[in-house]
Each structure stands twice: as structure tokens, then as C-alpha cells.
Length: 121
Picture: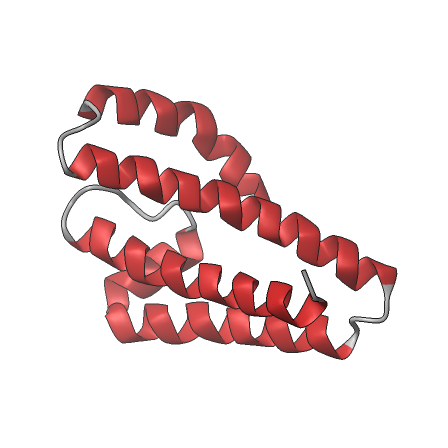
């Protein structure tokens, strides 16, 4: 996949993460694990979205500007891997919200996975 499409995919994942996080948190299905982002959510939806999307946009611009560097290429692959895993978390959360996965199962999964995601995010 061309580098620019990978950057677009990364920003798309960032956008989806922001929207899905708002939906899950506001409907009581999940909590925000990142303390800074949780604080922004407490302030309101717009501050959360603006900061989340600004960080994603800055990351996309930086990766695009330095796409000739090996570090940018590896960094992008790592970020895509992490966001792919995060989309899996959102998928499982959605299954739980629709009643396909027991809440206890989701809580157990969250307890096991949260420390790893917190160190990566």
C-alpha cells in the first residue's frame, strides 16, 4: 500500500477512534483510559474531538513530511498496528453494547488489555 494511503488510513482510524469513544463513553458502555483525554471529555465533546483530531492531523503531516525516513515508515507501521488493535477493542465493545458479548467478559478483557493499550497510547 502506498505511504500516503497508509497515512490516510491512520488518520481515518484516529477519527473513528474519536467518534466511537464519544459514543461508548456517552452511552455508558466504556470509559476513557487516557487521563488527559478523559479530562477533555469531562469538559465537553468538542474539546475532546478538537484535541484528538489535531493530534492525528499533526502526526499525519509529520509522517508525510518525513516519509523518506525509515523511522517514519516503521513508526507508521507500528501506529497502524496499534490502531488496528484498538479498532478490535471498539468492535468487541460494540458487540457487548448489542448484547452479543456479556458485560463481565468485556470487563475481564478490559482488565487484561488496558495496561498494554495505556502504555501504547
